[in-house]
Amino acid sequence: MTLDANEFIRRFLIHALPDGFHRIRYFGFLGNCHRAWKLERCRRLIGMASLDLSTEPPADYRDRY
Image (cartoon, rainbow, N blue to C red; front, side, top):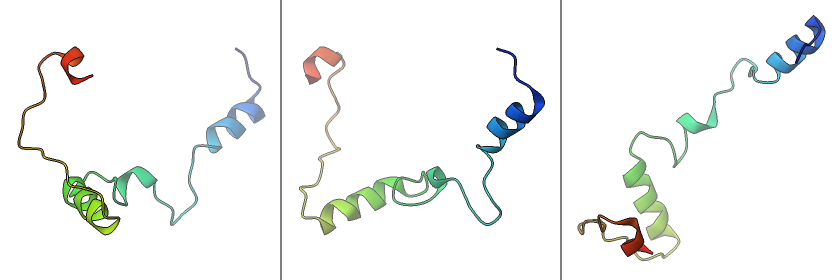
C-alpha cells in the first residue's frame, strides 16, 4: 500500500497520546504491578468467591474443559 505523506502522518499520529496521558495497560487493576492482589480485592468487593490457586491445573487442556 502506498500512502502520501499527509495520510501517513495522520495514521501515525492516531497512535500518539497527548502530554499527560498514559497507556491504560500500565495502570488500574489490570496493570502488571500487584495484579493478583488487586484482582482478589475486586472479587471480595463484589462478593465473588475466591479462586483456589493452590491446585495445579490439569496438564492436558482437554481435561480443563
